[in-house]
Amino acid sequence: MPAATTLVDLGMHAVPIDLSTTYPARDSRREAARLDMFAAGALEPGPPIYGRVGNLTVARFERALAELEACPAGVAFASGMAALSACLLAGVVAGRPHVVALRPLYGSSDHLLDSGLLGTQVSWATPDTLYRELRDDTGLVVVETPANPTLAEVDLRAMADTCGDTPLLVDNTFATPVLQRPIEHGARIVLHSATKFLGGHGDVMGGILACDEEYARRLRQIRTATGGLMHPLAGYLLLRGLATLPIRVRAASAAAAELAARLAADRRVRRVCYPGLVEDRPAGQMETGGALVSFELDGDPHAVIAAVRLITPAVSLGCVDTLIQHPASLSHHVVDPQDRHHGGISDKLLRLSVGLEDVEDLWADLDQALSVGVRGTTTRASERRGGAVSAGVAWKALDALT
Ligand SMILES: *Cc1c(COP(=O)(O)O)cnc(C)c1O
Image (cartoon, rainbow, N blue to C red):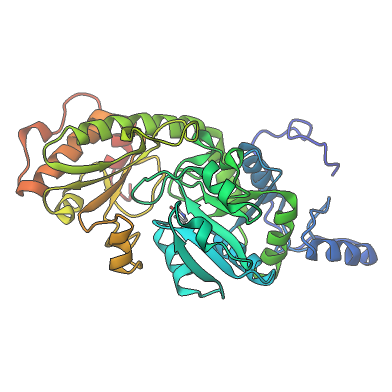
């Protein structure tokens, strides 16, 4: 079909899902030439020949996310970790296997780098020591801002200036392009675990990298060779997720800011990590404080996890419903305890990913769970509010199998 054909021209409204694993063609000489182009990582017009080479539904998601990140290209993968792996392999293939990274990072990213599983070598740095760690064979600098789970922000412009020609990869999973576009602050590659806010409903796994076309070619080459593909159904669900992304992220961020303020004013809480509460933030980098809040209480974090009722006690983030987890036990369990503590992740720290429930319902639940965590008892203030429940409460209250 001609490239200019729109959905409206086709008489369609919802995006079609192309589930083909193979694409018929009568001219095999032409296909051979196209296959060479695909193998070199080029984006060829027309059907992708074979499912591992590309997919039309996924390509649509790639273009949409690339536009949101103000990048020329997007390359999607089966998960965020598959996307990061492709970047690490790209450095190894180019003879630059050294990586400089800033802690804290998402636990599995930390583990993948620290273990050297893919043949990379890591030097851990701070914004101040970055310049000392860069070497001739450094293929990548990796940073997360706000960082998981301390929500510390890194000044990307300053980092990019120090990096010079070394590609700077920014994990933008927490902020999303709604609140922050790292390319505009000097990053070369933007990574997302699409599993989180981009999908937004806790029912799809994926990863995506937004970058320039030259780097995208290397990534497509690696993806075709290693097969860490995004499934077309995931591409479809992610496109659907993008349609509501700005509304979800802004609403969840507003609720998170409110909860962060209440936690900061609460005597049961020892420390609150939330970008919106920090005075000296990188200027013009992130629009609001985002939808995640981490905090430490004077009590037992495990008891809080066990006590929440509306909030879901689960790892992951960026869902329509609010999730709480204990990083030292789950998301950052794979990180060595000493490195964890060094990165500001204490054993008391809890991470809350705020969803779209009514903020008063969320506070009521958090309030009673904090009391359990601190004193082992619930308070009167936490009793269920009367009247109509918000949509977020209503769907959760249904029996699992009816
Ligand atoms: C979840 C996450 C990842 C890993 O993504 P998966 O889709 O789980 O593979 C990477 N970075 C951050 C910040 C994450 O939250």
